[in-house]
Length: 393
Image 1: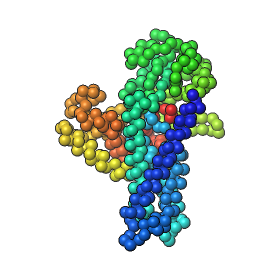
Image 2 (image 1 turned 30 degrees about the vertical axis):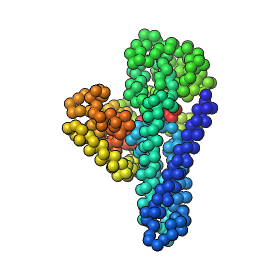
Image 3 (image 1 turned 90 degrees about the vertical axis):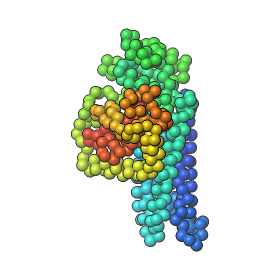
Image 4 (image 1 turned 45 degrees about the vertical axis):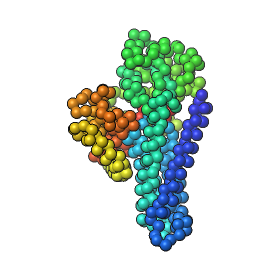
């Protein structure tokens, strides 16, 4: 199972690489048509600017690979995914400008380079947005789903189940859960998750069922040996294991994964980042959010007008959610009628159903990033971060 999963992931990565390169190449040809001066030969003009295509394609592949943009990111929010693409392009384009200016200082065509860069950014965002929404539709219909098994019945797994049930586009199907203490079964059974037995049943389930990942949320201090045994068993049959990362209920500390040699480390700290690092994060946050807001402005305008025309009330509202460092209020598009309780299916407007179905109601969170209320570029002292459910599955 592990071999076929890795092969499938490799083929998906290759497909994304080829599509990205096709996008960059197609935009290169389009840019030539747009900025080519009168009387110039089209193919001769493109040939003279071929280094721009080579430089941007090569640097984009390196940066996107480093940012893991060619791997599956099924459990990532739409805003975070677009921000990751924008951040990677922002970095790649700066390096591209530096390389071209270094080797082609006298022949540098600033107009071509600027137009080319903005069109590539728009093309990559549109491609990733279209790909993401298409995959969401397929997963809602039962295609490309991942079957998961949960070990442990408690508040943490209850929250995990609520997230997976509310986000069918992630494509996760919960096969059931195992629990060492039978009296805790009702915590997840009330969520419609079938109880499959105690932890001793794990080996039979892995052999007789198709399980793509196992989520473990048992208390480490009380069940360390059982957790270790379960992890070794999953490793032996090639099934990935996901540990719920909120091991320590600290409200003020920020967490960060790092490594010391081959030893993985989870760092918890209440100290803010250094001033240069904080300034760098804020610069990336502001730069990328401004770029995304500019490129996605047509989507904002259409959504804004649709909401205003369908029902009375503001188009943008604040929505409270629980963040790693406490309560956070995000800007979102209003998807319910004014005065109706949020979250009830019957209270959604027609526009709201469309926005929620495709995750577009969360796009205004880019304003939170721009104002410094949340960070999508990485840990910044005291700020909330967008988080994923797990590593790619």
